[in-house]
Length: 171
Image (tube, rainbow, N blue to C red; front, side, top):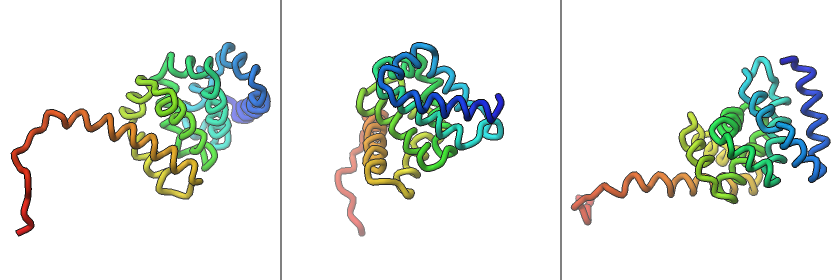
């Protein structure tokens, strides 16, 4: 991938994505798989600024029904790409990644996306780090919503645990 052309193309697509009808058309033309390829490239090939633009475009795609369908159709790869680049795309890129994950996992409750984020290497840790770091109150709230979803889902594995300890005395 040519760094300059990739960044120029992403800038152009980002400008076009402000029009709602254009978002649906871009998704139909294969925006989500192209963004997934950009996000899965090595950091040396695709700079952080290009990854940030790709995450902003993924956020725009998740804002329309066609985009959510395209992301969820191949949920493992696009969602994993968003999680993997979350911490490597600057503050705005990280916020866009949280919005994408929040839209899919919290707002629309997509089960495949939730499972992909939970299974991603360090996915929940990255969300927690973003929440604890220097972010806006809105991002902190959305990160908290995501962590609540995964906390509730992880409690199900403890349902079979039974104990006879009803009270533990400190002495």
